[in-house]
Length: 123
Picture 1 (cartoon, rainbow, N blue to C red):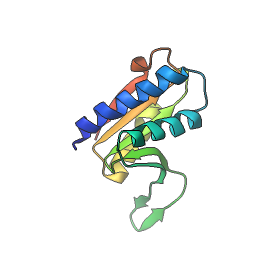
Picture 2 (picture 1 turned 120 degrees about the horizontal axis):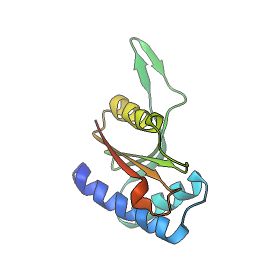
Picture 3 (picture 1 turned 45 degrees about the vertical axis):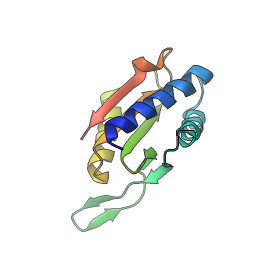
Picture 4 (picture 1 turned 180 degrees about the vertical axis):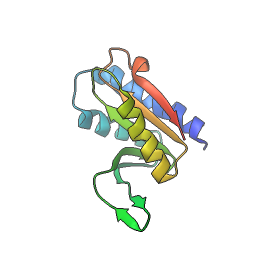
């Protein structure tokens, strides 16, 4: 399955979670529910995936965790913020770059209508 095909399913699952729960919960609640929904759709999902950063000969193993990684292809970053900022996009771009992934999705579950809080990031 391609990244684009996966993103269609992931976005549909996120909308389902938001439709049932609404805005206002903590990020962890959305993470668990989205992970559950993705698994119901037959997708492989990992949460809190450790991302190693390499600088020359130095390997940094702490501090960077991908919220959800779907099918070892799509990075999913979850937010519950007033609005998305450039730092959120930079964070996902960093994950894409160092993890060698092509596509990232940011979901801001703090929106009244989730489609207003969905951003695609391409590496």
